[in-house]
Length: 89
Image (tube, rainbow, N blue to C red):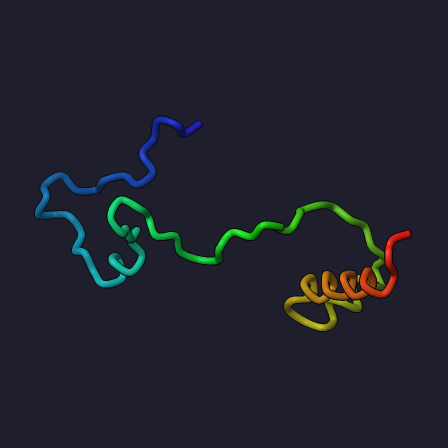
């Protein structure tokens, strides 16, 4: 394993050889308000999606894939709609 390796090796020895801090660097840097890290990106949800393996007929998968990018999201929506119209017994 690479447990003892540094994530970002330093290619410079003298501080004057350090890379210049650009605007892009500061845009990607962690932001703190006081001691609290400001989280970026999508907020955590109370009900995250569950990863699982499911087997569907090829014709079903082909039909959804034919609708283009986002087909898995549309398949999820179709299953949700089916659940709304077919209550559990």
